[in-house]
Image (cartoon, rainbow, N blue to C red; front, top):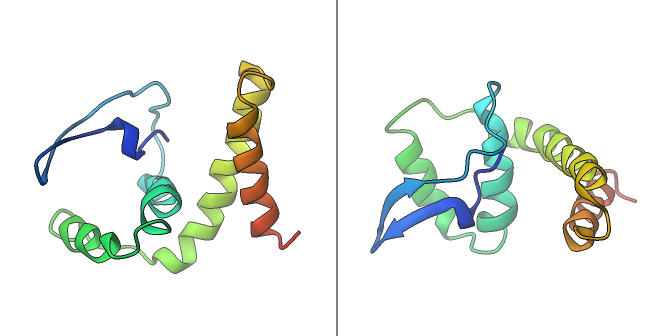
Length: 108
């Protein structure tokens, strides 16, 4: 649940490593696509096809159109709880980002 650009080490055009497994846990790998979608593909749509092409060399591609909305909701809801537990004032910007995501998902 912590796969985001700040945790990906890059050397030139290659991924050198992935760090920060504070939130790592067993579960669905599909949830990682929510961070990729929110922080990378929505900002730089041209990066999506290259990532998906590389991903498919490792495992079959899932139906992203079907799973991303569900995991986007789950991730944003979990982040709101994380902010409550870690301190709303210290994490106000992250809290607001995730509230906006929830509102967008339910067309509020």
